[in-house]
Length: 78
Image 1 (cartoon, rainbow, N blue to C red):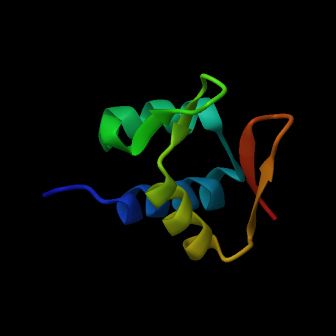
Image 2: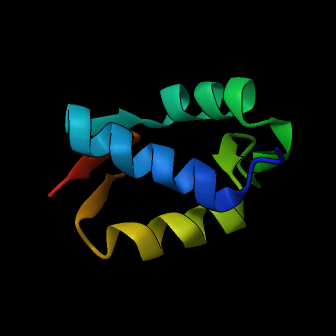
């Protein structure tokens, strides 16, 4: 079965609910391995990032209950 951006977003929210945080490099590696390279791209700063589709689905799913910590490069449950 083909994995979707929604599947990735659901995993992310679930992981953050369970552990409280999700580091970006952990998310990128997990998504590459379990969902596929097509959900990851290299941004203008040369860093690996999640696709716009994943980010959109993720924001919709968590509804403001997850915050991005820019300094620590991680998401956290609020």
